[in-house]
Length: 354
Image (cartoon, rainbow, N blue to C red; front, side):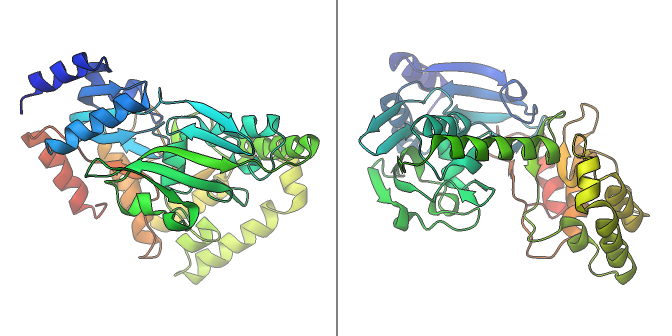
């Protein structure tokens, strides 16, 4: 089917869209090449009509939320991208809160505060949509979005709208049924309202908010930690080398003790740890597209090239355990089928990042 007919469908359904739109203006990391169609449905009914239409015609597409966990490449040209950010309906019934897939997790945590509902404090500051957070079972400060989730509604490849209980979603650490089966598109989620003390909830949120600003990168666009590592990232990186492992351990004793944390509380950095890792990986060519707060955080500094970013990811992945996965999604579909896109995909595959 031609894209002309697709555009006619969008106009008939009154679904907002932009043609040949640069995704870097929309993405959290401020990168991303052109999309032939960047679509912004504002009603769940329009969203399901759109998904059904694309499924029926076997057209390739990608649904994105706030993209805070997605690395879109400037060098690629994408085809059909659907954004859920305008799908932000909310309904409160008795002790339940129902939210559309595009609702902000940050706003959600504050709504729960106003409802004096405990158990959602750690979600404060997570820059994700409800749908995206459910897919990856977003968590922080011992609080996962699935903890008090009741059910999730979705549309499948057969255009059937179904609802699953929390138990049927198979949540795990940064994992869920929806991450394993990307053909299931989340429409909404329901959460339990757990009555608590507003003052206690607010104090926890303030504590977590301060911690985020202290230990996470905020100046440059970034996607948070790139690789999921259990334990200390730096010691995991050098654990095969006794000298560097002990050096890292010594630095932690000297600079991560309560006194030094208090002294550096307004501007904590991992400069010495980063320098140690840079020395460890020599003579490999290594640029600096990472945060001074952690070498596990890729940043968009406005000057690093695709090759430099890919080298960064390859070196980090090579030095971590073989089972360590790239936590953020490197978006390589749906693409316009031309030679340049295929060449970049091959380049990424050669580096072992696919």
